[in-house]
Amino acid sequence: MDILLVTVVFPYPVNDGGRSGTFKLIEYLRKEHNITLVCPSCTGVNHQKLQELWPNVKLLTFQNSDNVTEGFNLKGFIKKTISGKKKPSKMDIFKGSMVLNTTDLVKYYFSNLISLVEAELNRKSYDLVQVDFIELAPLVHFLPQNIKKIFVHHELRYKRMRLEYNTLGYKDVAEEWKIANTKLLEIGLMNAFDKVICLTETDRKILEIDGVEREKLEVSPLPVEIMEHPINQPFQFSKRLVFLGPEVHFPNLDGVDWFLNNCWAKLLKSDPRLRLSILGKWSHEGRKLFAEHRNVTFEGFVEDLSTIMEGAIMIVPLRIGSGMRMKILEGAAWHVPMVSTSIGAEGLPINNMENAILADTAQEFIEGVLTLSRDPELQNKFVKNAKLIIKLGYSVEECGQIRNDIYTKITS
Image (cartoon, rainbow, N blue to C red; front, side, top):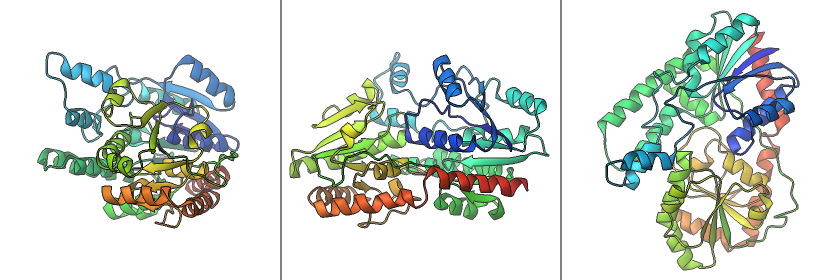
C-alpha cells in the first residue's frame, strides 16, 4: 500500500515517549507499505541519520512560518516579557506555555506545507493520506476528494484547553469562548476525514459524545517495548522518586509545579532521605522556578535510564492531558512502581492498588507515595502487574497490526 503520512513530529532522535511510539510504529509499517513521510525540517545530521535507518521511506520536509517556534521557550518568553517591563509572574509564564493561549486552528503556520503535499500527490498515486496532530488537521480541505483520508488524534485539543483553564482558579469568559469555538472547529475537522484514529478508548468515547460520527472512529495505540534490563527484579526502593518529561510540554511543567508546591515539603518531613530526579530537557529559567526545593535534581537527558530507574518510584502528577500516557507505559517497561493522578493514567488499564496507586488530591498523593515507599511487597506487586499491561496490548507487533487492519478496512 502507498501511504502519504503527514506529521508535525520529526521522529528522530528518539528522545521522548511520544516520538518513540511514532518511530516504532513507522518502523513496523515501513516493512509492509511504501511510506512517504512529510514532516518539519530538522538538522541535516538528523535527516541523514533517519534516512540511513529508513532507506525505503521517502522523507519530505516542510518549513514553519518565521513566527513559529517549536514548543514553548521559557527563556525567550521571559526575555520578551521583561523587555522594558517588570519581571513576569509565574502565572504569566504558565499562561504563556498553555495551548489555551497558543492554539489557533484557523491560522496557517507553515510556509510550504500545502504546496509540498499537492506536488507529491500530483507526482504519485497514493492509496491513502494519514495526517497526525491537530495543527495539521485543516490540511484535509486541500486533499483530493477521491483519496482516503485518515486523521490520527494524539491529543484532544479542546479537552486539554479545558483542563488547563481549570488550573487557573478563576473564571474568564474570554477563555471559555475560545474553548467552545475550538471544540466546534475541532469536531468539524474530524468529520471531514474518512477515519479518525484515537490512541485510547477514552478519547474515542469523548469524540463520539461530542459529535464525531461513530463509524469514523477507531482506536489504535502507539507501541511501547519492554526494556528488559537486569534491574528492579526484585525491586528495592532506593529513596528516589522519578519524574519523566521535558519542560516544553506544559502538562509536565504544571505537574512538577503542583507536586513540588503541594506535596514535596510534607514528604520530606516524613522522610528527609527522599530525593526527586526530574528527567528531560529543562531550561535554566525553568529550574530556577523550583530552586528553593531541597533534594530535587534536574538530570537533563540521560542516555542510560537504568542508572536513574534502579530502585526508583515513578510519580505522574499530571492534571492536564489527553491521548496516551507514555510515562505510565515507560514506567511499566522499566519495572518501577508508580503513583499517578487519574489523568496521568487515563486511557490505560491502570487500577488503583492493583498495578499503581491513583491519587488526585495533594493529601492522597502524599499518602500514596509514603505507603508505596514503605511497602516492599506492594512495590513488587505493582512491578509485576504493570508489566503485564504492555505484554497484553502495546507491543510493536500488536499495535502495528491494529493500524494495518484500519488501513485495510478503509481501502477495501
